[in-house]
Length: 581
Image (cartoon, rainbow, N blue to C red; front, side, top):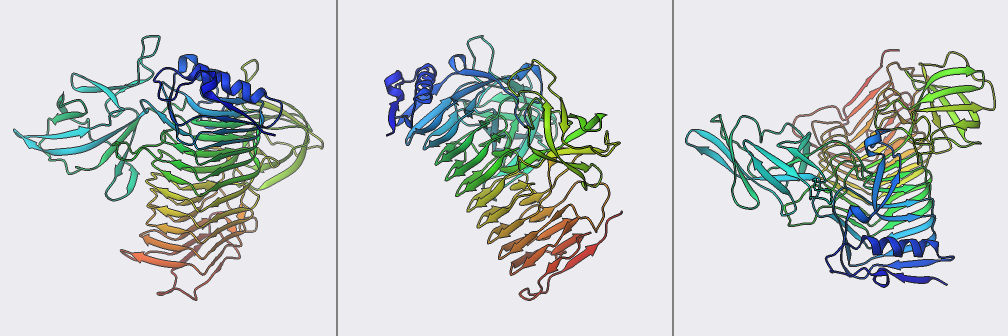
């Protein structure tokens, strides 16, 4: 029998306006500690959660800040630890976070379901500035920009200081000036978002506040701006928190959760098994002047296993990729014994995490070609814990059960083959995305079906794999892209692009890619651009071509490709070429 808990019984008052964090912490701890199935309910209403009384944990999370000691402690608004069979239910409940926090974290838990909650920030860490007026006055160009009610700022001479809320220490949660460190442009009328230069603060003559939410910027030049209606989205770049976190857990489901804003690096499922995200909405509150719902990615699966499922969700307004599924290549730095390798994290934003357990299978690949060198089974490992900084955070020493080839240092990388998931990405909508829609690199079956990709800034579906840049592993072996709509992507609708410096057609990096029954609306980009991929099947798709004709399919060193020509008018334009060997 399931036991019910209610945050109100622990002192949380819906719409009370005070800090509900202590009550929420107490309720979560009681529900998680209960021996048996439990449900924790948030009654409808608004709850404010401040960082001063929230839970904190030292954690190392993929694609955030690596081992930077200044931000190793994460502040977590809703923390579930060591729970087994817990439901957190909150239809009609809105949780408003203050400062810089992770919305939720599920750690060391099994069978956890979070449903119905809405998460937002009192002061989002992205500034959405809409140009509401522009022109010339007294020989000088000007713009008037409007910002949402939740955006805090002050005019400081010829600059604007954007900032978060004042905290108990008297300092702001965050602050920065003018265009901050990163910008992108959103066109609400055209339904697109792109990474592009920000001209708002170039050649400024004078800045004045024009009401509570408007800022008038006068320039030294007389070139009249032509960007009324565009939204300049500005932020800093340090990913100090994951937006949400599922860590070392099994059987976790997010259902019907509304993420109005995620600070940091989105919802990260790391070293977890059987994770589902269903019927969730990643979108800023409509009608507020806010358009950015995320500081970076929306969802990432890193080093997971079992099933990774994303279905029936809306992804609208991230600052990076909505969905990314990958493992992590570790560079071989040394080989002190025939069965032992010293590994290191190579990317500055990823470190401190354990990657292996005894019994895991690993694959060693050549970094230049991503071609397998050897398979082995982990026998012993010395690695970071992911929870403390008591030892080295960037290095791992791995001993396997059989002798390895020599001279691996520098030229090879290692992937944990055991921690790779089966992936289903089904019936989602992707819109106002500046980058790719879905990134996926896993050797287990992947199904991307019945999704709608609207005007992504880059490729809609991107299959990479590299041991030189982001170090995101590994090869695709069974990928089906079926029944989707691709509407005017900014790059190839499907881009299969292993980051290799050499190619061998006899040994392609990826294989088993099937593209069937999709509808493509394309302007100046191909439906499929692939390299070093074997056995591609492209069939029964519909192409609508806008603008000047271009190649429909681009294949570079892709052996055994079967491209159907039967249903296309005019016939498909296919470019085939070979890469340097």
